[in-house]
Length: 104
Image 1 (cartoon, rainbow, N blue to C red):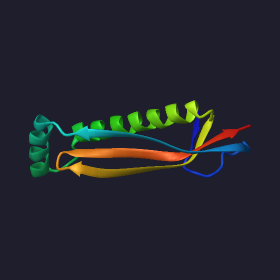
Image 2: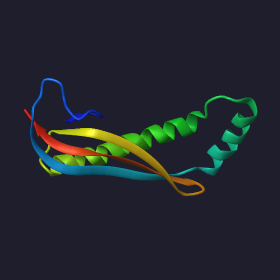
Image 3: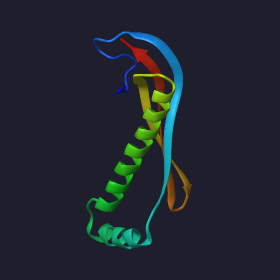
Image 4: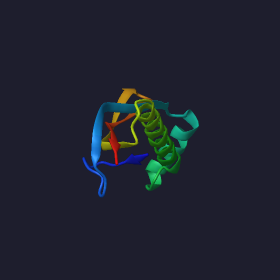
């Protein structure tokens, strides 16, 4: 499955547009990680646990979008975008969406 943020795939021709596909996940912070993050705020630097958590959330959202695209008969997704929104103080949604297409 080809996935791209552009509207075309070099060397390929879009022969059918199947429509929008999406995948999402909602993640909740862990109290233990919050305590470590507070310490990190004092000394500065990256909060590795949160970086890892958000990376895993993005991958899960992509996997769900790809599953939806395959179910629609697509072999590629173009114009892919990500968005994040806060559900509540300790929870965030990662949403990825794009246009499912068939390319040759």
